[in-house]
Length: 328
Image 1 (tube, rainbow, N blue to C red):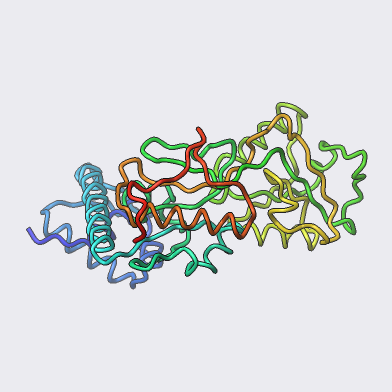
Image 2 (tube, rainbow, N blue to C red; image 1 turned 45 degrees about the vertical axis):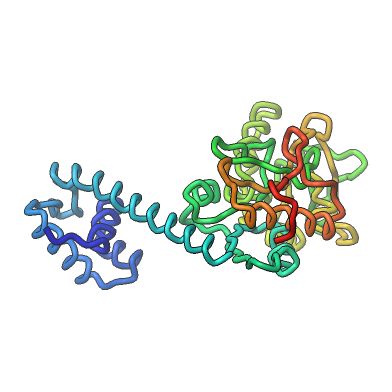
């Protein structure tokens, strides 16, 4: 039986979207190439996989059974490739770090040479829309992740977490030329009548759903529109030009460099949300590679130097430690 991965990938994509043209666009091939791959797969397995109808296509019973197997095969292939790449990185002394799109992540990415060790190199990758950071870490696509989270929502089975910084409450900021809020007598429900700007689920998981539920449960109202951003700097810039009222967790006045910006800024709910925002390093629980551990430790030192924060710690106060303190 002559099966190939591109044909399986095309089959799974077509089964998901039900459109030859959309599948062609998603895979960067022509529509006839999609048809050829499906015909080749049907010939190889000796089964009809799709029924063509006037309003589109749908999987046959055999197609439904095969698509489940095809997904598993593609996932196993992806996992195998990730493990092989992980082995190659270890043998070549390469540490792959995933840094988020916060302003801290952008600054750390610009200082990657500061946390490289003498006998190792660091390869920085940024988050993608294809794979979540936790999956990338658990499947060994990356060696550690530096990212932000809300109310420790990033605590995940199989991963160790080391907090570089925690911040209290919520920060609200707005362009005073567009929004006439009174800082001294600020009324949060009044801000909810405007478009609000928030970090996306990819940037700070769990925050937007929490905020929307809190607004409805506490005030019985939701904002008329919500703009979410995958990048903190873009969110700040959108606020600066008056696109909406920015509502973000933690001390955004310092974190997003709002001092002297001319924006109205209010910090609130600090007592109710003492651990609203965390910026953390995540490692696999079973990670024993000393180069990875020492690189993560070096990054925490660079972070403290850049942001003048306290020593990196886990949620129970422990520092990141390598088993051997000798320099690499």
